[in-house]
Amino acid sequence: MLPLGGAALAVGDPVTLGIRPEHLNRSETGPCLMEVTADVSERLGSDTYCHVRTDSGEPLTVRIRGDFSPRYGERCACRWTSTTATSSTATGRPSASRCNRSPEFRRPERVPTMKLNRPHLNDLPARVARPGYDLSRVRPGIAHIGVGGFHRAHQAAYTDALMNTGEGLDWGICGIGTRAPERAMRDALAAQDHLYTLVELDDRPDTEVRVIGALRDMLLVDDSPETVVAQLADPAIRIVSLTITEGGYCIDDATGAFRADLPEIQHDLAQPQAPISVFGLSARPWRGVARPARRRSR
Image (tube, rainbow, N blue to C red; front, side, top):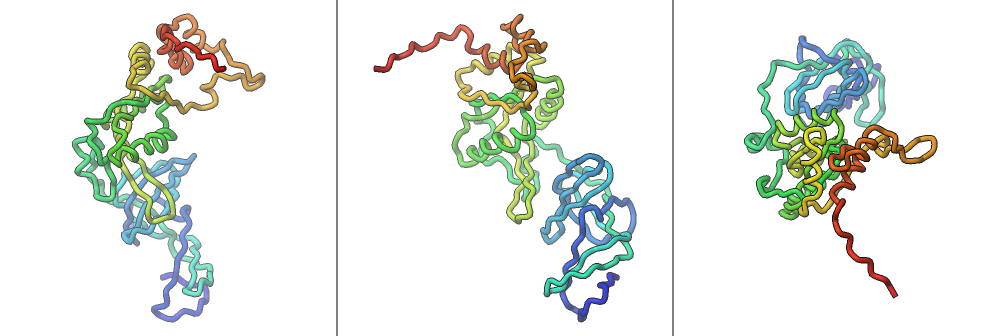
């Protein structure tokens, strides 16, 4: 029962109910108001924002205290405890309403999971777009340093979109990691045949969930600087790109000068044949390469 604060409504009149994300909380038991399907979860500080869809396709954001990460496609249930909701009639007039219970969010029974990899691509739900090209035909043409979320959501996604047109299969991406924490990313990607899922979040109904296949390998400097240098020097690599944070540029914030005293820079100066920094890796493949003669313009 939802009292509408004295609003003049007749039986059968449509009412729109507004629910704030923070009014939906995790629950393990209790009667179910509605079931939703999980799209993606974002851990923001002490809260988790779960983006879900109702059975009619309406997007819904659920704010949950703590860590709660339902898998993509997992069915979850919402129910109510006490809070204030906002309702409006067909005329758009709002009225504050007090519910006996506020929404709670619970995960029902554990559902079977499916590992993302090449053999399972055809088993994904129909809503998940997958590469429309032969992954075995993709050849590296781009070496990218810094395979973080920005690269995977933008440059790799655009490259994948090109490949889905039937072109650019020689522009596959080989990722390169220069920092020890990037090993976790390399291991996660390798376990998934270097596939990952890109989820668009928007209020529009045409957002998509799609598997990206443009990234075909990832190398770590810690494993073998020589292998990384050889990949960068490969004639098939026509673009070396990078996404690094401001700290990766080795610039002194106070003076704006390049910090040659940093350990990674000192290492590369002492051992140029086995560089570990972005700058050493960028310079090493060109050492010993003859420069073309300059033409004098007249």
